Length: 206
Image 1 (cartoon, rainbow, N blue to C red):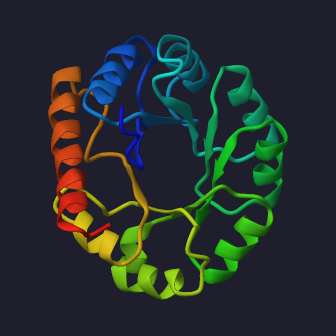
Image 2 (image 1 turned 180 degrees about the horizontal axis):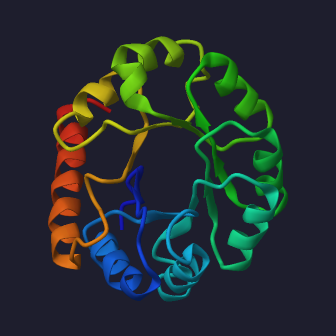
């Protein structure tokens, strides 16, 4: 299966629904999933996803704010740590236990602080405040191989513009999942987002 640089953000999801939602996402081509730590019983959801879809998807946590939370996610089987801020302590703790680190950044200073601390990539958040022009300017000073994800403000209709600005991938939350949406609804939204991303690849925007 092609691993697209698309991360599903399941904010607010409950453990009793996470397996069905995860299955829908993975089958439609979104194989990176984060459960924010301010969701109901997030570690249980991560545990369920990790046990059920081991080898099929990269599972982890979002809104990770401390080294203790990093350890808890690792204990639940998670392999991805996403944060809303640039905290070198969290980044270092993440790398120490062998997980992938994608901290939230908004300025060039935060970008380089995160990379020097060992981050695997950058989460531009909230991307809607910076816009494609802002990301293009920041991208110009980053190493070409730096993985840059836009989070907040990107959806199926705007992907091409963000990619043209130098974004590598996307973290997608409410455009995919909100509490109360059925697996069928999430599947339909995932299919549209994957189709939009694939159209960008075919048109040469990547």
